[in-house]
Length: 283
Image (tube, rainbow, N blue to C red):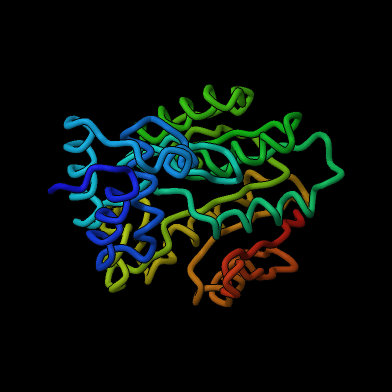
């Protein structure tokens, strides 16, 4: 291939990705910036710069991975969430903008609360816990995951973001929590049905199935958490779930069944049911 300038390489990358990505231009920019170890603005500032052979080969290799469907975040090892850079790996889900709705909702309801205890169940990269900690540094936040690789990654993100006040440790849901109680419990648990066709499309093909799929049509982990969270919430404590866009009513019914009050569902930026939460009013 005779193309040599950054502009030409970007055009080539966009063309290669045009049938496999909905964001081909952006993907090409991110991958080329990653190869050059520069900000994306550098590509616009120096459009006539040429690539040396090792960089050409590296860019072509990354393009091939993206053409095969591998998520950009896994290729470059990072994803922005809540305006914070999170390291990611195939051991965890990639943080998504929809989850920011959960952060916004918790902060909205506890905006004037300076002291609060919060538990993030299934923390993955630590995105939810660390985003909350970045806004509320005095909150006492615990974050757990059953996957030790996820725990180690979340700890790495906490160090990189200077948010090491978050207590991150391994636990299979509530198993390692003893009798500790919280004002707020949040979770983005597995909620996809094993037969869902979306599991064979897009980025989720590369993400860990254990973090995506749940039994009982995607509801088994939500049911388990709702039942057991009652024992770990203070009176008037709140439980927040992220869930699938068709599960709002089902999750509200689960919460109501276990005695939670005021169950309600909030839509994400795309207008889909995404977060359901309720209050535990201890009997």
